[in-house]
Image (tube, rainbow, N blue to C red; front, side, top):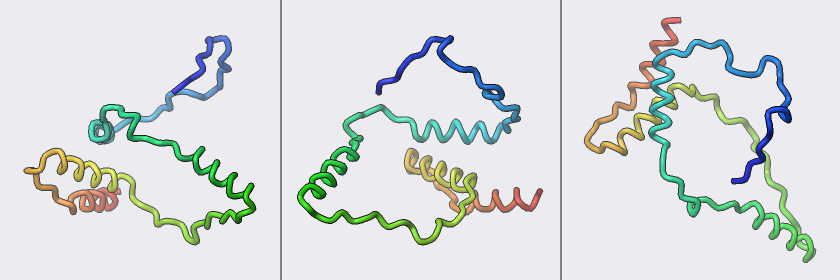
Length: 121
């Protein structure tokens, strides 16, 4: 990847930009670290392919040959709202299960924990 580097005097300061005044809970930090560890992997550029240019060239060739280009259909209804914390905990539990096959993962534990936290409020 190529990035443009700037000198400090070339960067405009924006008021109010920076670290917000937020208290992080220890559980949130722990889950964040678990997510990072679960998703960490060696970089292999061969695994990734940018098909945008290829698709664009095919689209242009089709138009030049007089062919019809089908418009992409927009989704008819929105996806349901998901409790992100519960989904994250379930994902981490599944990742731990893949790393350690001997460990049993209880799939209802994240749902139960979320239910308790909502009742406690």
